[in-house]
Image (cartoon, rainbow, N blue to C red):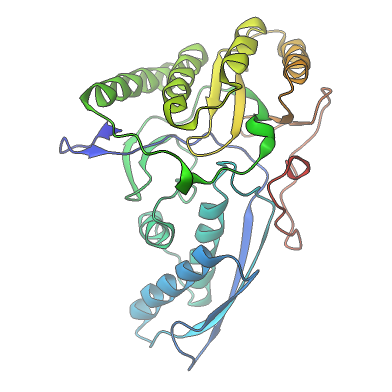
Length: 315
């Protein structure tokens, strides 16, 4: 919880970027059909369906045509329910596809506004790659933190056995003035970490934020994860604010990273914490899948890639 420019309390988050999995949307308009007559494949993507209806209304008004229905097809490979932004990925792709069907390109602020209306809260996937403090329930940027995060190597893992998290079932904790002061303090440190490229300071901020988040999430593996990070020379840990996906953070500029990654993977296995993907936060992403270190390159999801349920093989 942070303070916006008017001093008003506002929930916010910073997204950790990961290249690779994504969503693809194709929308075909049905001129003359009812505005709400949008069919979706797969049929369970209700948030994307709502986004299509909202985007059609927005775009039709801009081009001076009556709104209509249509068919939306979604494909992708973002695991569901782990805090990896799968819903926002679907909805953002949907809004852009609808706009494309009208020959329009919507600005990121409009996409964010429609995305929040469709799913109540979203990640800033529709923005540029710059790190931002983002008000996920309002779809607006509270602060642009800088050009890029300090270069990190992230050893991904799944807490709770990789089971999806029902965010609506999480306990609600009312934050007080002390919480806001603490988060504003972390915000100042994060701003400095980005400005100076200080990966160690960024790791401290991420770990402190993850620790405070445990008051709601309560992952039983949290202390083991932070202990592993300390023993293998990591700068900290990160945990999704509403899911079970986590990562051990390393300074990409520090020497000996491959050995540290190997040590981390062995330690995670010894504690029964499944490793998922090892990746970097900078452009030329290299990744390591499920265990022994080897060189590989991210391969984007193809248009025929089905959405897989959130279980470990999907990671």
